[in-house]
Length: 338
Image (cartoon, rainbow, N blue to C red; front, side, top):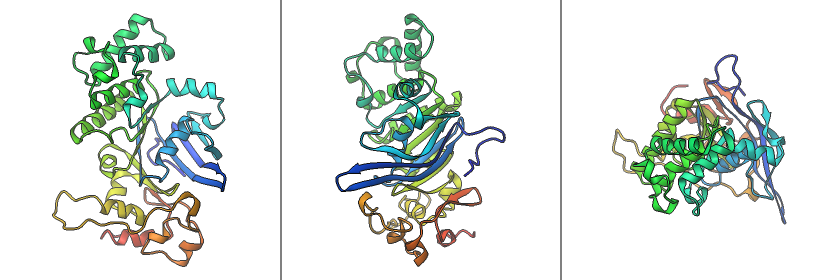
């Protein structure tokens, strides 16, 4: 599988191939992710979208090396700038995670130490990973607070997390993720708990900071609107698999997979009045009861005997990789000619 946005002669910054994550239980081994493959180029924002439980956050945690036991990587590889992350010892992974891979999580209070000032947390992060003195780190901490839009940063650098609003705390988390100048940022639902106006500001901040520094971003969200406004490419996940991957414009305007079409149909159009939004009948299967063949077939109006018996492998259609036996049917329903 090739990343169409990767420039000729330059490999992807992050390459995930055949990733399988399993969870042993008393009733058997559950497969949470199966054969997940994708690339992210330097300076690119790749959006991961899908329903809750599709495997989006789990993919990010696998890349970060933060899977909660007993979940573990059972197969596949995660290559970051030539390094096999899935084989690194825990100590090396921690060092790499702080310096070259940053993380932004949904709840900023889980990322910030309530007993330390935000300035102390920023300076500690920078001094751990970058060669600088305490005075230099403090000056840079104030500058980072200014860059992420914290008012009066020289005064607020010595404030504690609880003294900031939710939107301001999330801005500080972004500063923490970027202050060590990482090459890759995993942003897991970074704006879910924020109101719409603050959400837009935080996403614009993340986008501008990463574009200026050439940082790659894996943006995990359930919101297709967030993806369409901020990502370069999108991977649509369903039941632990990637259903469709491609440039945002292609996925939004010409969805090939019936699940992607269902997601797009659930978004209210801004240019016309509609009485009812489309919905996808049924629910995503549980880990212990995934159907044979294509996992989406019980909810798909186009399912055939082939869909029930065999799982489709991703294949290229224009710039899109789609795992569907009948993608043209899904495309035809959008009113766009194949």
